[in-house]
Image (tube, rainbow, N blue to C red; front, side, top):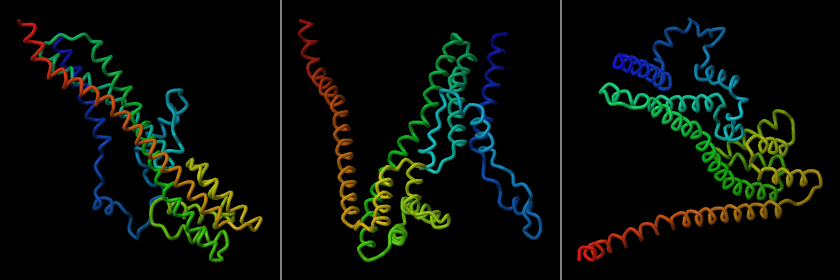
Amino acid sequence: MSTSLAVLSGCTTGAGFALLVRELLRPQPSLAAALQRTPPGGAQQSEAPRDRDAVWGRWLVDRFGDLPGVRIPTQNLALLQQTPERFVLTKVALAALGLLAPAVAATPWLLLGVGMPFYVPAVAGLAVATLLWIMPDLSVRDQAKRAREEFAHALTAYLDLVALKRSGGSGPTEAMERAAAVGKGWPFQLLQTALLRARVDRIPPWEALEELHREHDLPALEDIAEIMRRSAHDGAAVYTSLRARAQSLRTELLEAQAAEANANSERMTAPGALLAVLVMLLIAFPAVLRILET
């Protein structure tokens, strides 16, 4: 009876795990089949089918987004161009995978008749699920940190370009737009989008930069917006101010990189010392063994 129950539970767990993997790794729909379903004349259907991941993610956000253990890093996700729905869905899927993995791994041992307390896979599943639950948060945090550093490096070049455009006689808005149009990376594309939105909404470009700062937590943009606002309202010369801010930002980035390098070096000190101790023990072990034998 216990063997049959173990086989049934193993089959159920394996089926659930297979369905979860199938939904997460859903194949790309066939283009030919999609074209065949398109109405003649290119007419669009009244309601396009929504992405199932977005639907499930929205359902999870609506029901579990306000729980104390669920914190959605909206600024980091906006910077990485990821949706909260996808983020929460990934967390839940990884936690479910970690919860089921020990049970699936213990099923063959149960089928072989090896006794195992039921709480062992349960405790292991909770531990693995907790670890996988926080992994997306750590991943998003690290990716956002690297993205902000990359944006800061691009912003130093943007400041120099704006200063050159202003020294050439361009107005504040023209200088900011023409300087943003020079770059091709994603930081410059982000600036181009913000300035284009400011032009469409008929607002000053420095207000668009402040809004971009609030949306993505980019502190350097606030300083640039303040400098450009002063130059537009007071007629102050901003060439020196922009070049000074660019130089100070470069200094801050270099200091941060130096601090990170020092921290990495300090973290390598303990493994190096442990390796040296192990080598000393390995060298001294034959002599100590010979002394003990005599």
